Length: 357
Ligand code: EPU
Image 1 (cartoon, protein in one colour):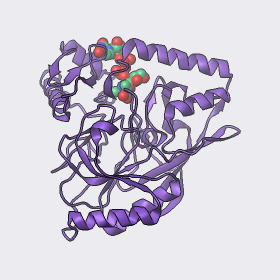
Image 2: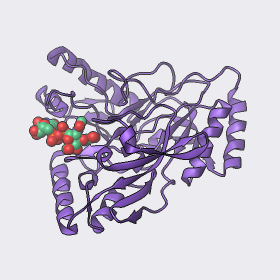
Image 3: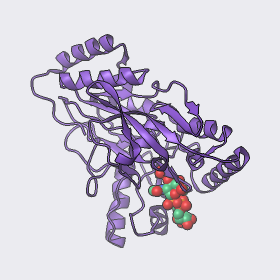
Image 4: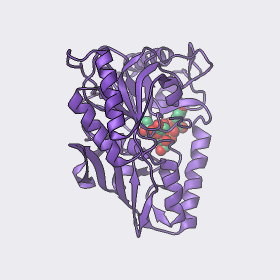
């Protein structure tokens, strides 16, 4: 979550500090980027700073320095699970896509960094005859994003194969046993302010050909049932936990497939996907459509839908996001002028279109 910045730091002072910290820690710092370029929905406003560490150590040092300086930050992986507001975002975005290195295989284990591509990891594992994540091969996110939200598809969830997770603490890389993390449906016990740097997964030996067949099967199902090549963030809402109900089916039954608000459309292929179209599409269109869906489901089915995508607000109060406390905790609520340390691993691991970050 991003909270109010101590009222002692002006934006100019903050900018000078960001530059100084980036130079000291040795990370690339970019200005003038927009969420529309960095997220798969291709909407969203200007970002004050994008910082791009290349190693786990640099990322850990960076967030420590930012926190010490009282500068708000938020983590972006592949940007495939984020709907960011159209207005300017007055915080630092830590883009993890370059923290990838190589996936290091040793027996049944693989050590991989947060910025590594999840589909690539699934292919690497299949090649080595390692099973347990082949269902995740079509999720166009990073490993870090997958860990943050416990990404899942076609019978696999990443949390089930995590031996240890590396997180940033006190400027260092610290290893946490996977068993200490609560892995729920599209949700984990990782806290705001925790930056995930990588993980060691423990997979299961199996025949490469069989793994590949299962990957193909998942791909086939996905191509049959979900939009591809569209600008989406995967499923927009969670399925109502513990009900066995499918949100996509409910929206479909309300006849909302194809419903259009501005540049946002309920996918005609899968009703739990909101896709954006055209140059003029705005985050506000997608949000308005999403809220209309929620309102109808509330009225007609008595169900309160939880966002699965993370809503990154440019200013003001937190709103519901895919990361929930009771119903939702607004992990990634944006905030206006002044910034304070915080985080929110973005849903980098989301089913949807190709990640552009
Ligand atoms: N259905 C409809 N109309 C629709 C969509 C679905 O009738 O527009 C029906 C399907 O025919 C099926 C049922 O609803 O009978 C369930 O649909 P589906 O198999 O597509 O599963 P889902 O619950 O909608 C979940 C995940 C997907 C994941 C698939 C496969 C959530 C919110 N969604 O979808 O994850 O790919 O299962 O494992 O949990 C994502 O996380 O972004 C995502 C897309």
